[in-house]
Image 1 (cartoon, one colour):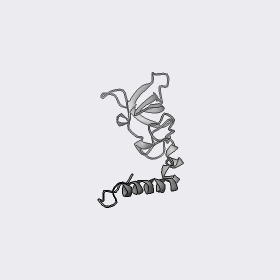
Image 2 (tube, rainbow, N blue to C red; image 1 turned 30 degrees about the vertical axis):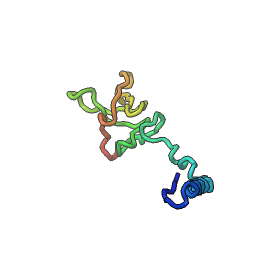
Image 3 (cartoon, rainbow, N blue to C red; image 1 turned 90 degrees about the vertical axis):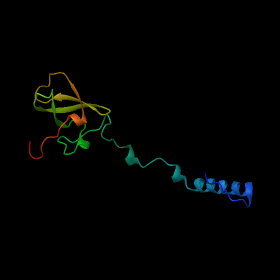
Image 4 (cartoon, one colour; image 1 turned 60 degrees about the horizontal axis):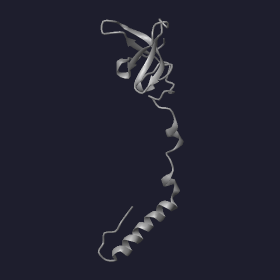
Length: 118
């Protein structure tokens, strides 16, 4: 809301400036509209974001993506499939050991598969 601070005209001038600003906003209803529909698309971190099967970038990791994870610092890296997302934590299932319990990892604890044919 714009308000004039000029000394001439006083309150009457300020009232005119406020109403002209309100008229401008009313004349442009698109200024009050929500962002485009593209902003409603799923993004990484959403529970329903379906990622690339073999992501090339961490932002492409989503449901169904195959990534590398490890059990601990002394263990090697193993392929795991993303089966759930809760904020910034991924639920993973070992690809070669699907009956093992689900593991939870943050994105910074995962690695991507090397590019090329699998």
